[in-house]
Length: 109
Image 1: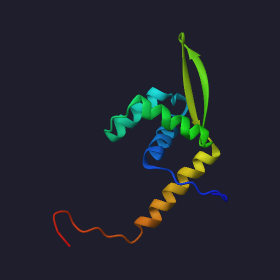
Image 2 (image 1 turned 90 degrees about the vertical axis):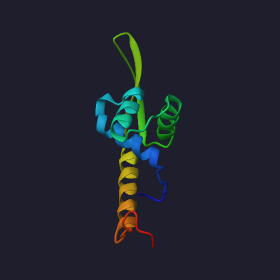
Image 3 (image 1 turned 60 degrees about the vertical axis):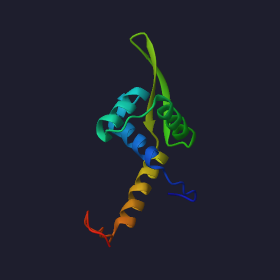
């Protein structure tokens, strides 16, 4: 990633990954449903839209309004910087996990 290093929070990563997974169907409630389905985590509408707006402001997502079937939905798509941020987050996780051996559950160290 260029000169500006901005780490993604866990929920920001989850939202970006959900948008990437949904492709052209990534609108707020769809992203929220995808997150709940894959993580089992309930997400409030407020947290969802605040995070989507923050990711748009950071330049990691772009949004567009689309009127379908009489209602307007705001759709989201990853930008090149969003892809770079996700790749940097994955690389950071891989570097941190490299060589780590966790103690077995139930055993105290």
